[in-house]
Amino acid sequence: MKLRAYLSAAIIIFVLVADQVIKVAVKTHMALYDRIHVFDWFYIYFVENRGMAFGMEFIGTAILTVCRLVAICAFMYCLVRCIRKKYPIGFIICLAMIIAGAFGNIIDNCFYGLCFTESQPANPFYSTIAHSVPFGEGYGSFLSGKVVDMFYFPLWTWPESWPMVGGHTFFGAVFNFADASISCGAVAMVLFYYKRLASLSEKQG
Image (tube, rainbow, N blue to C red; front, side):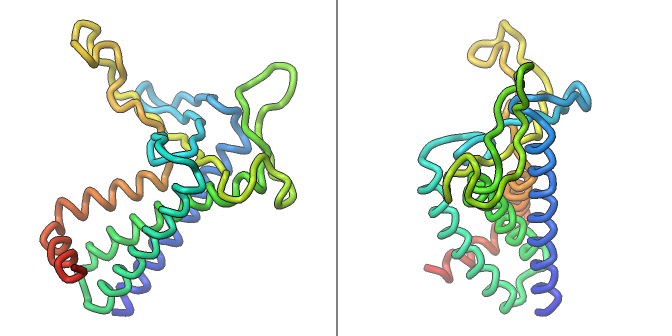
């Protein structure tokens, strides 16, 4: 049981630290919408959003953050139960990745508006790159911070002649390390542990 507990804690800490290091580096060194060409199919592209993963926006930031906190509490409860019941280590890893990713974006929502100036598109007449400020003097209030995204993989463009998708980029979403952690954890859990998920949901019910 201790191995599972230590491993899940290590994964959560690693994802949170890596996610925040990347986000702060991008936010404090790039203007909004700046791009760094890494490969033709991979860019560092700085955008911000107030909503869901991959830049989607459905509801207000504060409401979304509260919903995320409730979800994290539920996932943490499940994680503790799974550790105590000695679920497979792979399952524990997946669950820890989902929790860490969700918490990583909550940090942006809760605190970035309080401790950074607002990022703006590049302007030749004045600096538009954000910088840290004394706590509470940032661009927004508690729960109003914007989530920083930066990974963009324009793998290919659909042929113009194709209906509906013609001319559009395949996988045009911009995401961050936390989003990737959530997605990889969730996909791996469904692919390899769907039976465990079914049994867990039955026990919860």
